[in-house]
Amino acid sequence: MTSTPIPEQMTAIILESYDGADALRVVQRPVPRPGPKEVLVKVAAASINPSDLMFILGLYGFKKPTPTVPGFEGSGTVVAVGSGTGLMGRYLAGKRVACVTQQDGLWAEYTTTTVNYALPLDEAVSLEQGAMAVVNPLTAVALIDLAKKAGHQTVINTAAASALGLMLHRLGHQQGIEVVGIVRRPEQVAYLKQQGMTHVLDSSDPDFHRQIRDLCHQRHIHLAFDAVGGELPRQLLDAMPQHSRVTVYGGLSQQPVQVDVGALIFEDKRVDGFWLPPWVGQKNLLQNFLVWRRAQKLMLTTLKTEIRQRYPLAKTPQAVRDYESQMTGGKVLIMPGER
Ligand SMILES: NC(=O)c1ccc[n+]([C@@H]2O[C@H](COP(=O)([O-])OP(=O)(O)OC[C@H]3O[C@@H](n4cnc5c(N)ncnc54)[C@H](OP(=O)(O)O)[C@@H]3O)[C@@H](O)[C@H]2O)c1
Figure 1: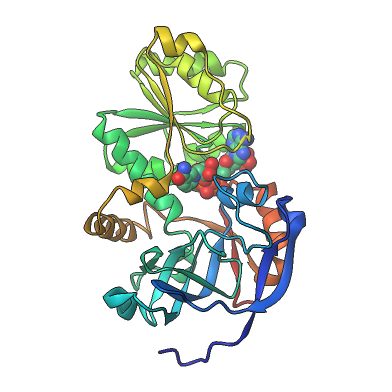
Figure 2: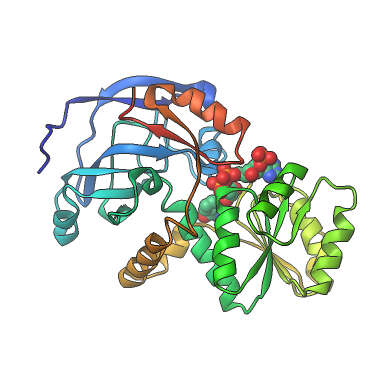
């Protein structure tokens, strides 16, 4: 199927222990072979997301035995298919795909993933955009759909200068839902206003609490999406009227969520969580196909991600440190094909 033969060995990044970027090593290891219902992908680009940072610190929803190859999301070309992949496997052979994996990951020259997690890319979508095409774009679609189905016209989103925050703002605007952004630095307020966001508040402003409370009551805001955790969910619940909800979808502060007991008991306020895999898992094959098709149509506009920097695979530890030090202003990509 592939014109270039698959080598025996590849370069990969392994995580030796759950100690973050310091525990990443560049190694040679055998190219994995696709098992039943799996495909082998030659990786073109891999993203670094907050979930990867949490994973390499042992703070994500699961751990794998070490050493393990990190990298949940990326793109590439399907170069071999395993048994039992059926029609889909035959269709994907040789195709460019976006892929996610919870097995050994994408910070490597080759990776395997289950056939359902390799999603064919439209011709118009580059492999670089493809490497950021699943996790954030589908989460944006999911959160805006949740807000819309529950009848909200205005919602709050925190860490709003993130790649996902920008997608939520643009997709919300298209769907008639205004997203109020909360950021933690004044320059992020200016950045988001330039992107066309009308209401952006800075949580480091001493007057933040009054500002957010006034806005929530004026605009009847009852739903907030939170990527930060710590004390922000408590502040948001306090600012919103009775019967409001904070949906936590990220833990950027790495702090436990705080909530006032009285808000839960006497004001019927709620905190819940959102994670993309169960949202995808609830849908049938056709529904997921339609979501993916819709996301791809928007990939070059509403769901586009800016790229700030590219690194060759061997410089992944440096890439991770670069991303940790500056998360706003575009993603850092790992490019296994570049030297
Ligand atoms: N639950 C799910 O299924 C799901 C799916 C996709 C994404 N997510 C979550 O969505 C969030 C955004 O992801 P992304 O890839 O769009 O991020 P990103 O583009 O890498 O941007 C991260 C943003 O968060 C800000 N930030 C970092 N630490 C912060 C803190 N302690 N308090 C406030 N702001 C902070 C950064 O600002 P600075 O420049 O100031 O650091 C930056 O603007 C992450 O939490 C991610 O885990 C969750």
